[in-house]
Image (cartoon, rainbow, N blue to C red):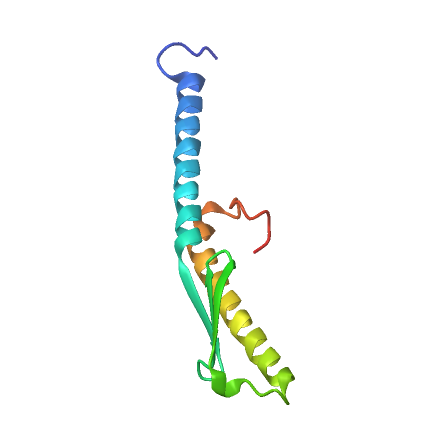
Length: 112
């Protein structure tokens, strides 16, 4: 089978390379979007609020002073953990929705 200038295998390979480059650019844009996406995890009726991006990078925590009891530190620990886990669950959903179309080829190295 001969492949000349009319496209043949060379043309298919070129199209494949263009598609791969386009997918890589889309994935990079989506990764940036995930970096900037704000996720809010809460617990205790919003007594504890945790802010993170869709890659689970925590950048803030707010605690209602009414739940700070010096005699019961374990309760506050549980509220913080619950808010973080709530945020993680929401971040996982956003990540799966946005990166799912790339078939697990995201840049998180299988962390999600």
